[in-house]
View 1 (cartoon, rainbow, N blue to C red):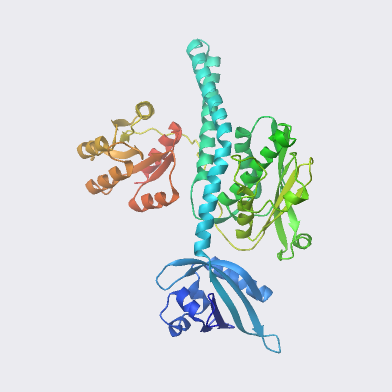
View 2 (view 1 turned 45 degrees about the horizontal axis):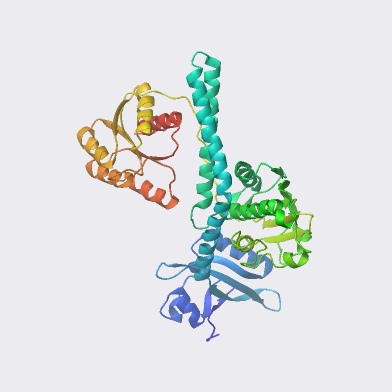
Length: 501
């Protein structure tokens, strides 16, 4: 008890701490055992209410918890990621008398795992680069070709309208692909939400269809009655992408008997906990959602299959892969209290089954903001546009002027700030790019607030880091627009922000 490197505690039936060891005093950040015992029970150690509720639920239901991960709050306000294992003790009548357990600090391990996942994620994006380049060249070819058709077909209204519509679709496809890649590539803390596995699979299939060789057929077999699962959207997307990249390589690896032609099928289904416990005794919950990735590739023998989750184990040639992909999948499933199963035989393809528990824990749903094109109302106010790209600046000016607005323009942050100093009393709203020369959009916004703290600013960028968004909200930014600009949406948001007062 005294010499353990893990924190050990004893608490009463109502979670009042009765005793802790020196490691617990150090982990919790208090000067003495007496100070720790003065805490208002175990609840004083949890940073999130939903984690405390889930811990209590499991302890009450099973009489024990094992490796329950939560965020611990130290006395100095610092947060640590820990694993808690505890069990209850009962009297002769079966009534709980106290709880005993230990807490292990895994913060440094989690930090290293996140760095490891991020490095592997970049490798995953690298494997898609060829397909992405190919697809973007196709999109640029479509835009260029139909632009030339528009120039030669001005007298044919039907051809002109069709060309415009095709160009718009090509741009939307390119924009969507960039958005998906940025979402996948961004570095972010795990964020667990209630999400629908079918939605995530469909989202991934759209990206794979754009980037994988056209000789590979990608299809889905989805159960339409799936319950929500609690998962980190980015991590789950990464796990599935890793499996799909491996499936692609297994199909196209002609050195090992691949044919370059094949299929990948992503499926979902409900699984009863009792059925899963036949393979995984620790699958203690009643229901699970299974996401499967099946391929018609070269398959694996038993020796290879037994080692695939080992870090750095790979059957690929030197320079073709690091062997990290499947170990990352395994780590992600562990962090979700899930399980992974593999079926494979040589020349018969492979199937990976990922099992995620269905719990009653309440997490906020993932909100997808849709950019609906509502009826556009014109205006007469003055708008300042700060954009360094000349063609985009002229485009925005044309659309806004055509809808009744008076438009002022600036090419960089310094010009924008000077324009605001001269005409600030007349400017109703500022639309600014974030990546401006001389003076960035963020710095310009801050200085504008120093001139008039009531300034209304909408900021635009190709990508907004989530943490930066929070800073901008606190600083008073009214909205964020993801490039490429969609004129109708910009007109709609400008009108709404102005009318909001």
